[in-house]
Image 1 (cartoon, rainbow over the protein chains, first blue to last red):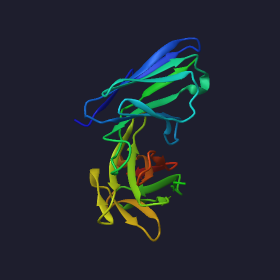
Image 2 (cartoon, rainbow over the protein chains, first blue to last red):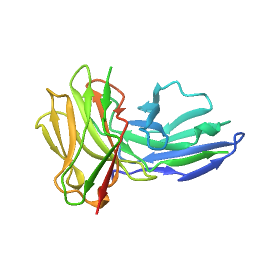
Image 3 (cartoon, rainbow over the protein chains, first blue to last red):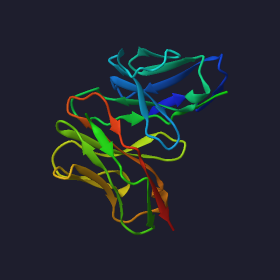
Image 4 (tube, one colour):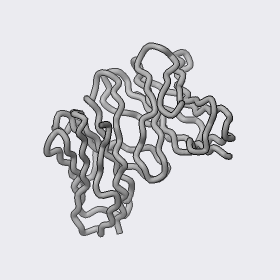
Length: 115
Length: 113
């Protein structure tokens, strides 16, 4: 099974709301990623977890808060977002963070609209 | 610093004709190179990768890519394009020991019937 699942598929939230995005993989991968993607642009790395510890934070605003409850799950908590945060949020996983050239497996994404 | 360039925003090709999507890279060490495809409102799907070994790499859906170290290129190819190949294609690179995947800007492939 090479599937990464993400919920919800679509999310509309106001600027004062709190919501969470969820990502799950059962491939035994130990690295998990959050990306933000604007239309027709490449994905931008936000956070990386390696062995359930935050390894990379690409200077993302604090209104985005990642969480890795266990090796299979990755959450992204959202609070007080801005309209410019509207984008496709992609989760990915790979067997490990460095070393051999492992590919990342991507989920289908959550389309977020901030009103 | 690592970087990837996809010089063409869009590539148009007729169905049945061969296609090439270009990618050049810059890394300080040995590269790991990847191609991904993205259909509208979907995540990225892995097509193929180069780690080491044969310069011609075969991947999913009949795609292949040729690694050229002297030209620092990793062009994606397919002998006979299908309309269903129309999508956004991303080249990506990571150098050995690196912890981030660097994506190119993407190339939109349009295959006309």
